[in-house]
Amino acid sequence: MVSSRGHLPVMLDETLTMLAVHPGGRYLDGTVGLGGHAVAILEASAPDGRLLGTDADPDALSAAGARLARFEARATLRRCWLDQCAAVVSEAQMAPLDGVLCDLGVSSMQLDSPERGFSIRSEGPLDMRMGPSDERETVTAYEIVNEWPSAALANLIFEYGEERRSRRIARGIVGRRPISTTTELAQAVVDAVGMRPGARIHPATRVFQAIRLEVNRELERLAAFLEQVRGMLRIGGRLVVIAFHSLEDRIVKRFLAEQSMGPTPSFRTLTRRVMRPSADEIERNPRARSARLRAAEAI
Image (tube, rainbow, N blue to C red; front, side):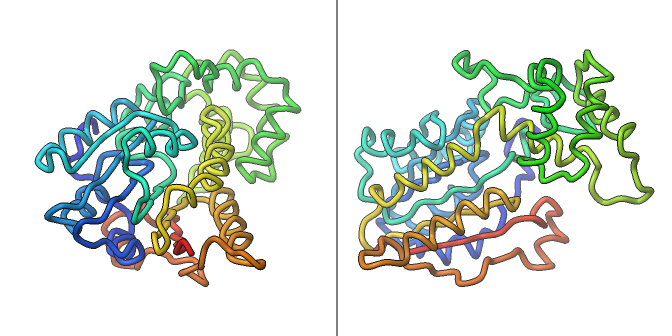
């Protein structure tokens, strides 16, 4: 899916509530994707609210640009990695912000574009770069799958995929080299550990997650972004992060816990317990099932 039609932003009502979107506010969508959350923020902040949308993926920015064109000067889009947002906010003269949103993970467009290499079920090259044309990001999934030693590959799958069968999977991958496509990699994992009939989650899902996180340095960039975010927000400004697996959520949870304690806290946590999508939303959009939202207010 290259266009934004059919795109369903995850936990939209909860996001708008936690961001406390209001007319005239200034907002950053640090992972604008196809622009679903951004549209809702701009509508809720009418008539003069502004939004800066950033993303590492040029294809996503193109789709978001088409979707946000009707908002004209109220919407600004820039390409950058998450850990570069603070500099872009400063350059765009948007600080201090009233709200920052970060919707982590892979977008629908990336999953539904086989040539990007994110999909387990559709054949494509082993790429997995969020910004595929960015020559500065030289590591691809192909290099990790075909060049890393078995022990290093097993450690990656165990740490970033939280996969207990990582050594067996790594041996299976190494034994099948060279592996050129996503479906070949998925089959190598199935051959290594099997596949239970009727399983909801493909056995290669955690392997793909681990490799993607490494290719794009996602956890490292998230931690750096969180360290910068307080400097972007005004007092009373809100931070909302939607994570899709425990590694991301753990980083956010730990950061908010640390920043809300001590003699000079910088945030007040608004979500004592992580928020999850409703059963109705999951039924409408199965990709939302693993979403978890945390929010905080700058103090």
